[in-house]
Figure (cartoon, one colour):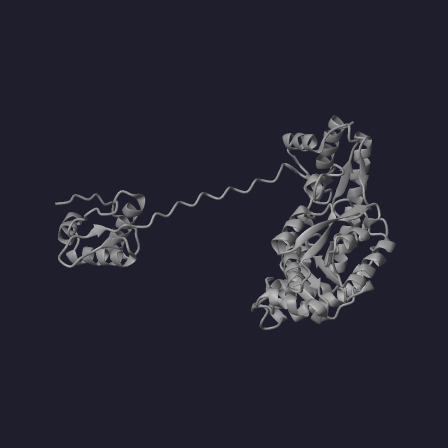
Length: 459
């Protein structure tokens, strides 16, 4: 007679049979009952547990169906040989944000226009279309595409009909979609600015393109390098170079379009910080110079919040079919969110919010630059007055980028390094510091902490 210790949990839903199943299943999974172990007969186990024999028979039968037991008519019931499944390691917990968070990539999230968003959401739910919570078409809701076409024409000089607009879940998603579409059309060599956002470079590579570097100088991307590389497409940030911060010079804008026409190439224009210029009116998009040769990308990540995961592309007819092949059946963005954004654009609530934040971020940048100049005069800020971050530079002989990163981490300060943006050997070092990220009540403390770091390390 086989002895078997089973702990029956009376709280298991489904009665005693389910409790017996759960106890046996747990013992087998834990390795207490190994393959080949003979179990007590149903009559014996029923007597030991004080239950009806039929309850144990049913439990054994269920576990046999699931593959945990082998039962034979008139024979013994034994534990089955289960395939060994390695335990998946626990995913690492996400690192908490640094106490003094000045990393690039997000606006002041506490400034999100809650009242306007709530009012627009309520309006859509009460009086919006009946399919507001249904799947959205692959290219996005027609209401949002029409609102974006009108807004982009008015605010960014983009030439687009609503049918040319595609809505996607963030710039990263749309950059991958566009790259796959370009590769499907034979444009598998893509020039990218050197430096550029390193994760954008990784996205383009993963999407099937070969990336070639196009150096950037004080006038922006060097178009001659794009042409010399034999690229079929070029990803650029003309409004404000994503890391170095300069605006693409007028001559380079014309040259970029001329290259695309002559080489049958396409330009992917990431309108990085295009709406956040502080020293003058924002410069219009390159797309307006040749809508047939420029694919335009924009996002709400900086103007509202990155967590919305809402971006858009304006796609010329020449690549529309290949883009559609990559989109799938439905839009990757919430239908309700799309309708809310369409409402904000149509009512110009978005414009009002953007004007307020442009004024606020200008004030913040001015304070950050002034404080840094006062406390760490050996440092300087490069790039035009725009966006949510500043590129901070210092004399090369004073300290290395890695030393500054280590010192910042030791003080609980989070910043972004320029180094990973270079395609190869860095041509310059710097720190990208997000003066726009901190909540308004904590600006001075964070700015002071960074200025003190630079003063101690650089002078």
